[in-house]
Length: 387
Image (cartoon, rainbow, N blue to C red; front, side, top):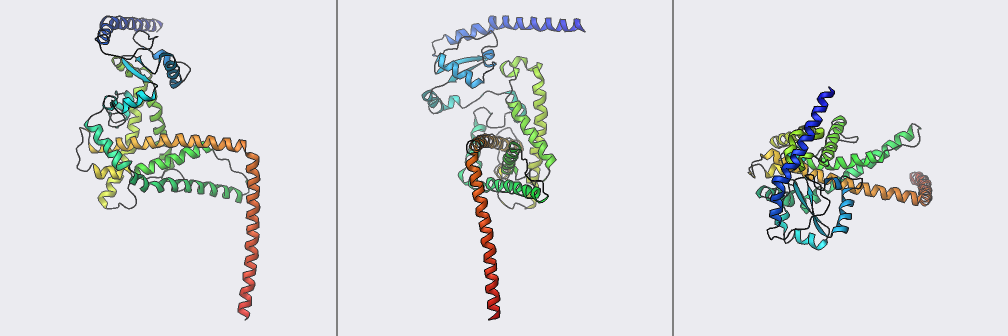
């Protein structure tokens, strides 16, 4: 067994050396020649390694945006990095960024295909990952004019409000129940509570279902769905070797692609189930209430032919794209507000306690006034009956 491992290590080392030699013999002269043909190119940051480029610089202890910020302070507002076989342009100037997304927006509208969205995004059917072209323009128009329009968001505004109301009501009922049986205070995990609130809002906007809470449909299914979504975000943020070195895709270093395929299968199981429920309701004529994203997409894509993707794939990919975007934004906002509230409570805990005691005193005075008023009304009623 040890001899087998030694042979594999030797073979991998030899393969790595061979790849470096081939890179400097075949690839490097072409890139050097193309960069020196008179066209102006952004300067490349020094420190690139052979074959892997600047990947080691981004793999340090600091977060990538902090590393890139330090490099921008050192090398200027515009420079390039080598990420394997790809070249990335780094901008840190507001004027340059504005020019790229206004004057040169057509050049920067496309994006490279990555393994995560290939497997978990229905082969780049999500418009956030698809290359610029007719399909991207059509789906973006649908998302802008139908799903994210002011009218649609106003129609779904009550979803957020009702979810907050129901979640707080459930907290109140839990506290009242604990108080009734005499257990006193209630311990609530706020991170989980906020997570379930955000998840409920997102899923209701996508398919109209409510997973968590007293009126939830199936909490076990909800936990599975939440885990699948969490796996999606985790796998989407991982560094996959084949993204930087496509010729090494067959190795599946780390087993990430296998995990992505498994997560994609689980995601499709949920999305396809929601889509079939919507289609059944539409065929039976049970289309009561507000339309969620899947309802809108079913109506739009009924007779449309946008690309090689079928209507169901476009519906699932677009609904997932917008829904997960909502989930990211809401999670960030709630996390920020939670930190602010926690800081406020720590800083002004004594004042809040005084306010709490004052409010309780007002409530007790209000209760006493109600009792006195009830007695007065009862006396008046007796007097009127006597007269």
